[in-house]
Length: 357
Image (tube, rainbow, N blue to C red; front, side):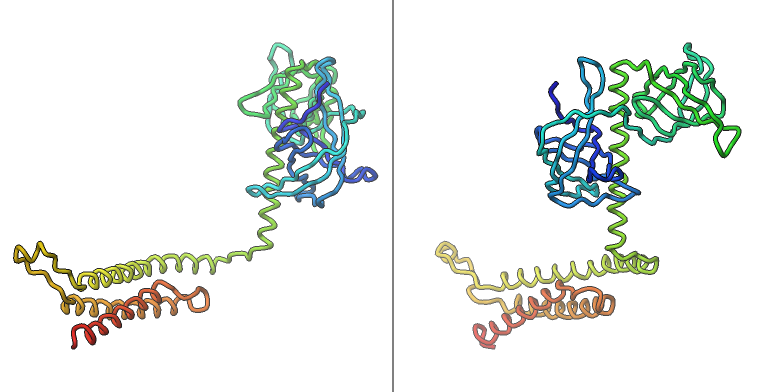
């Protein structure tokens, strides 16, 4: 049969073939052809397992054989090409470097999953009792109940891995023993012997989906824990000061806006003060047109420039008293003050040269 990977499939990564403890289950996040694919970085004890680029890894996965309606196990060698942190989730890219090899393995992947579910002790749907799941696979389930169920009986378990897609499965009771810490709770083990092909496929897909969500959360949690070591913790005192700085910066922003407006007014006044050419048409109709610089507009420009300089010095003083040593100098007041000073020099030069004052 043709073998291919699909997004959401569960795979097992074996880092060292001589070390059985170096096996980690993960989920395929994306597929690029039949040789390149991305998986979530494996998690162990709440932390991302570190794997170096170029490492050779044994990948084990299962696939349904439609001819026999059974899942078969395959393995191949892959090389770790690159690592990436995408939106706080650690991903690794693998390149398949060997052919697929069929292996022997009997058990299904067992997902640790704790959730309240419902069980019917008879096949007609009656005798319902509440159970708490502990783990689940495509071959069976383990849960905790407060009522004893006889081994060998057939029951119906209402499995809810995905809220909108529940599955009702007929199961055989393998055992129902007292829990070690309580005589009122029972450790119930179920075996799924009568799963249809569609039920098994749906159950495996849901188990893989739940595991993928677990890996995302764990990878994101591990990323956040690394960030906590990199970034200093923000104490309550620093947080209060930060909020106060934000409010102060907003108030100082009004002063900065006034400064920019005054600079614009200075520019407009200098434009208004400039000479206006006398056109022949205006002379024909005896329309008076000014041809020299306007002293009145220049006077107003100088006054506004002096006010802008004073406002800039005031803003710089307030800014430095608040943020000295914690933030760089506020360039708005520096630029506006420099522009106002330049405008004064221009106006004074015009008075001294053009207007002969």
